[in-house]
Image (tube, rainbow, N blue to C red; front, side):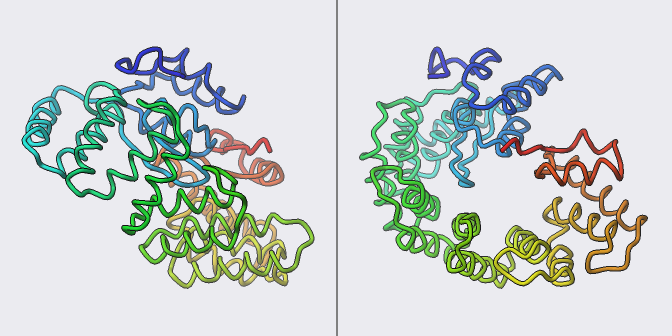
Amino acid sequence: PLLASEEKAPNKDDLLEGLSSKLAKKLVSGLLSSGVDLGKDSDVIEKALIGVRDSHVMSALGFSIDGGINSVGRGGKDNADTGKFSSLKKSADEGSVSAQLSVAKAYQSGSAGEISFKKAKLYFERAMKGGNNNAVYHLGVLYKEGNGVEKDEKKAREMFQKAADKDVANALLELGVACLKEKLGFTRDLVKAEHYFQRASDLGDHSGLIQLAEHYLKENDNDFTHERGIALLEHCVGLGDAHSQYLLGCQYLYGVGVEMDSKAAVRLFRLSCEHVAESHFKLAQCYFEGWGVTKDVKEAMRHFRRAVEICQKYNTQLQLMGDDIFEVLKIDGELESVLFFDEQ
């Protein structure tokens, strides 16, 4: 376990020891060296770690992340929040189910002033007894991660299924990912995964369908799976999902699963660019190379700069592949500070 004591907030050594990749270690070390406070600024670390998918550190900070599924808590608590939390806890202890759920999340994330998974479990159980279905899902997360309880995937699966039966989107996503990645005792079952993801999508969360589409598109030389991946992306695009617009644009730009069509790619990047920084980057590439548009270096620079602005606004980085890195650096070497290099 990363935490020496449940009652103790994670420190730098705990975090760095648990990191599962050199890239994540370098990233968090840099953040901490720059003065990021593990309590007050954990949202900054959260956003950075989402990019590297480091579940060990996310768990230590009170976050849960698994293939794009995020149950995010905010760490830290200043003096101004002391009275608010005390009042909330008083309401929880008096029987308010919504307050019990909020107090549990606060202990889980550290916004209560401490990270205590045992206390989180206590209040999640109270909220569950009061009929709160989200509390059932959160208990499943504790059992899946082994936080405050002995790790028990069977129990986690039972909790997720119970919450999913009550249409809790996060629980449906957990079950879908388990079917996709052979976790929680599931064998790989893409049909069942899509069933769970579609139910979550019907509730407004399309991330599972997008993840399944990416899985299909990564299958080498398989026209059927590529077609299914494209169909899922097109479905999510039709629902107005910006990330799927970006991903489908990439497929058209490079001709993966569809006929190469740079003009269609540009249209999709334009649809999503105000929500997805990488779409601005792709538009910059298109204008610089003349793909689907008239070559225009000034317009390319404008989109590069807009991508940077979005990254700075949300404390994120452009998540690009190796060839993209070289492309952007030959336009503007100053952008290196906001690049995220996928070492895979």
